[in-house]
Length: 77
Image: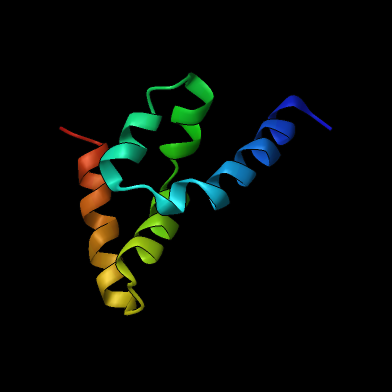
């Protein structure tokens, strides 16, 4: 098993247990823990799932709108 896939497996456990229960500002603080957490928490898939769980969004158009906003937020001009 590569180091990257091992890190991914280790990250999946805290994600499922911890991050779904945190508020958005706390997840943003977790991005400051280390480079690997920042990389994992900067992933669009993570935020898509986090937003779906945190805000109970099921309407695809709402999710698409938020993805656009997240992209703009994470890629400032």
